[in-house]
Amino acid sequence: MIREPARAVPVLAEHEVVVLGGGPARIAAAAAAARQGADVLLVERYGFLGGMGTAGGVTNFAGLYALSHGETRQVVHSIAGDLLDRIDRLGGLNAPQQGLQGRITVRSYDVSAYKCAADDLLLSCGAKLLFHAFAADAAMDGDRIAALIVETKSGRRALCAKLFIDCSGDADLSARAGVPFALGDGHGSGLFPTTMFRVGNVDADKALAAIGEFKAIDRLMDEAARRGAYRFPRAGAVVRPQKNPTEWRVNVTQIRNRDGRAMDGTDALQLSEGEIEGRRQVREYFRFLVSEVPGFENAQIVEIAPQVGIRETRRIEGAYQLSGEDILGCADFDDAIGVNAWPMELHLEGRIAWRFFPDGSRGWCALPYRMLVPPKVSNLLVAGRCAAMTMRASRRRAPAAPASPWGKPPAPPRRWRLPPARRRPMST
Ligand SMILES: Cc1cc2nc3c(=O)[nH]c(=O)nc-3n(C[C@H](O)[C@H](O)[C@H](O)COP(=O)(O)OP(=O)(O)OC[C@H]3O[C@@H](n4cnc5c(N)ncnc54)[C@H](O)[C@@H]3O)c2cc1C
Image: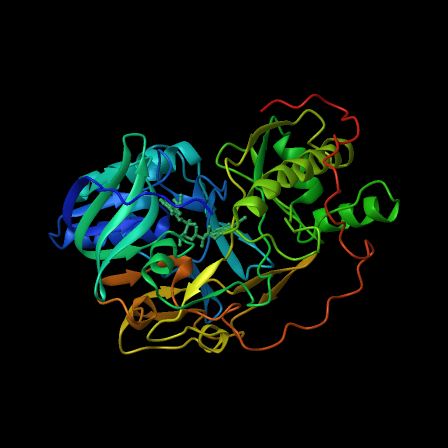
């Protein structure tokens, strides 16, 4: 241990509301507060907004459309609708795409357009933005947060506010302020992270003919794995076109530690190894795409996401804990503040398990205000993936994994190796 000397921290700013984190939760929280006339500051560690949607390379909006009584319709509007319109006006929004035999509807987008649209949306509401500021601590005054302490290029600074909203995804501020939380599955694992990537120069017609159909890419992976040519990190992939039809996003990697458990996105060393492992898996899967999948013969990697995509870490204990039963039961709440139309998508070891809303149901559940309200700290709300919910938002056990032709997914190598030779050079 090194003991740091006590020091005075300059106050950089004072606002009514300080919102931490620049993901979709924060964009909505900050825009909502600013539209009500509050003086709002947003604090983000990167130089742009979007969270996993940009930094994690997700590039795809899910959960806005419900399969409601057999008909697909948009059920999330308001600030999300405003953001979509702005991305669309910048030419960066794709038409709705359906998947899983019509049970889900998504809209992919261009990352740069999202970043610009999010800036515009928040500035138009009157919110202020502080980029390149990493939340490091909370200065407490009894049960209140007096200041959020951030590390910046100018040094350590304090940000004071009447109300703080933690949208860091990892509940960083809540944890520092002493809010009780659960981490992953509570046994050292949890939902598995994914390093996303996009490839360009795809022959869209050829690719759609080959893998446009439900599970067609899974069948190609299956055949290749049976030949022993590849070892995939998980069964099945999402390989879909973006707004520019020659550009496709790929969601297939799965980042686990050497003991097979999901990488913990709050552990500095695991995060570091996970980034390297993610890029190793990307190069291996890219080799499969160009060698085995029609339409990808001349593809190039356009971007490996700036950071590994984290699905879950800390989730606070809140006044209400949203559960899987609430989701699949299309729950209603008196204090509803939003709706969720996405089914349960569980990224388990080597596979994804889906739990859908019942056929013929309205296809969405309400989200209660109480899941944002933590105990112990009186001037804090917590939104986004670190709000109060159960791990799978479910207490039910997942069914046993189906027999996989790949057997147990490969563990990361003990020493990082270069992948086997690729057929085509990769450009990033
Ligand atoms: C691989 C992957 C694929 C996904 N696919 C889809 C999809 O297709 N469609 C979809 O809708 N959803 C998808 N999701 C889920 C979606 O990304 C999340 O639901 C969403 O991003 C959660 O939003 P959030 O604002 O709670 O957190 P995040 O998006 O994680 O945002 C947290 C923000 O806080 C910032 N931050 C964190 N810690 C600090 C700190 N200490 N100091 C300062 N800033 C900090 C981060 O930089 C980030 O901007 C996917 C997720 C992953 C990981």
